[in-house]
Length: 285
Ligand SMILES: Nc1ncnc2c1ncn2[C@@H]1O[C@H](COP(=O)(O)OP(=O)(O)OP(=O)(O)O)[C@@H](O)[C@H]1O
Image: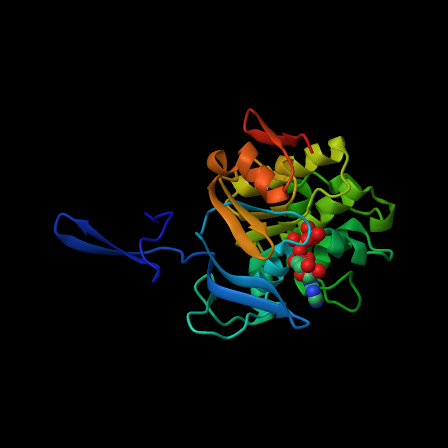
């Protein structure tokens, strides 16, 4: 049996079983950060953050504009590096040091910024295939039969086969966003990081987008949802981390965090939080 949560930071769990020591290997935390400070252009943007996210845990990072969410994501993807200091821990899946190319195969990223870079003629299928090369579109890349087969599987999984040969620039925002999810899935990543993923989606597109993400979460991929919209917090997300001014403002089970006073304090406005089934909505802004 593989335990869902490690009992120690070593990733090895020792279990007493009828006086016999049974050693079991469990996955290390997805993220294990301590004292992470990020400075950009001489400005301290993230202030000594500590965050531990277990393997298998789905979280939302929620915060107002400018709170540091994207900077934190760039730290996770190793585009931003923290200031060296005593007590710094900067582990991803148990490792401090990563080859960025390898890390990118283990973390799938979807963001509106990535979508804006697909501004030339690229078919939906090629957008997915470009994920194998971390490129924006295909150029002289050699596509193997295995890659084509994987792209077909993803098209089917995301129910977007009918759009595979359409140019990205001729798709709606919602359709294009689903192809970017497909691109992020080519390496079967351990985690899918979604940065403001529902920006620009209408209700129909939102419905399809959420269904796709829920299906991915159900398949065992960790979801890290970065957002300022409560309606992005899919039922599979159980923990919410709030960010404000480059610091963690609050962190815990969503039932405890998504409260009028806490979310009102986060955004500095009166807020009414409404729960409908497993979904949360905010009004009163
Ligand atoms: N390269 C940079 N140089 C200087 N300041 C930066 C840089 N990148 C971000 N910042 C500043 O850091 C702060 C946090 O920005 P960040 O983009 O991480 O916030 P965010 O929570 O993702 O915001 P939003 O929700 O608007 O996308 C902002 O004040 C921003 O102006």
